[in-house]
Length: 151
Image 1 (cartoon, rainbow, N blue to C red):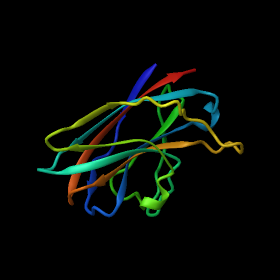
Image 2 (image 1 turned 120 degrees about the vertical axis):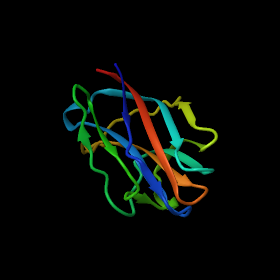
Image 3 (image 1 turned 120 degrees about the horizontal axis):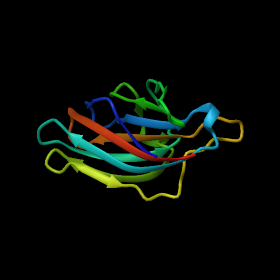
Image 4 (image 1 turned 180 degrees about the vertical axis):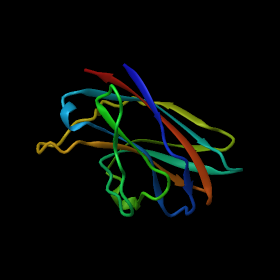
């Protein structure tokens, strides 16, 4: 089944900070589910702004925390950022994909990765997080993540 979730509006003020836009992980009782990230859409809603995006496996937050919520009739939990959850360039985890987008050129990208959501040996679920880094300051970004669930 194909599903999608919209991230919170991200107000990214500084070009030196990486901001969490949307995250996904398996529910604790669905660790055996198979999830593919299929598509990402990003839109800069402020004027004349440019941004870089990263799709990261198990990044480590340096400021704030992500709050994951169960998705109805789904094997996953979703966390929406908003700007308060931040990373430094040293703790982005494994970068699965990345790219650029701007106000003039919104981005929709099909993700082709063999990496799937899973869990560590102790049962801690992996997290895949869409992270944005502004190239111009004071950017506002809307995001959408689409995934496929195989149960």
